[in-house]
Image 1: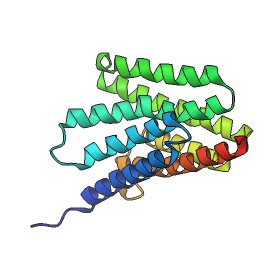
Image 2 (image 1 turned 45 degrees about the vertical axis):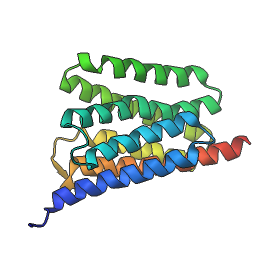
Image 3 (image 1 turned 30 degrees about the horizontal axis):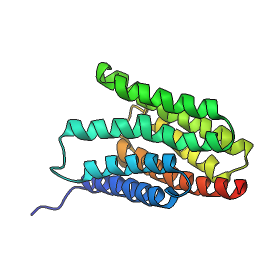
Image 4 (image 1 turned 90 degrees about the vertical axis):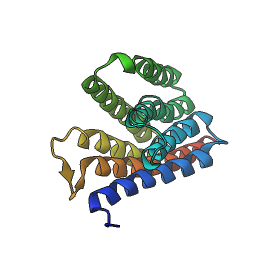
Length: 192
């Protein structure tokens, strides 16, 4: 049996890291915020489908990643806005994600890519804004890391920091998810 090349290992590790962080965050936030827990769970499930051989086709895995992006990430932002009284922004983000999820079949591959990156950046910026105004340091880090993942995905290079670009983006998303989990906890403590 030949050893796997480093690229395959880094891909598996990035999916595993994102899946474990997201699953832990989903379990930890389930009592305080069902919406954010569902968003984290969607991310964990999307990462798990990419890891498990034979679990689904490549199209199923891409569909799972699409749903985790356009519904899961707005669910994370929803709680930040809702707790701070900005219910219109919370509903707008979540509604927009739902519309994109339904419209995904009618978009080209490039259209889905652009829409997914737009969702990532909008969610990152809105959470970053709320975090700045509420002085939530974890939220600021989460917004910065999610924004970095969104911007790095637009880079033309195939490799970043000697790793495949997608693995670096998933690593940034995992760090951002951990920071969001901590930010949600901090935010709940401030409002109690």
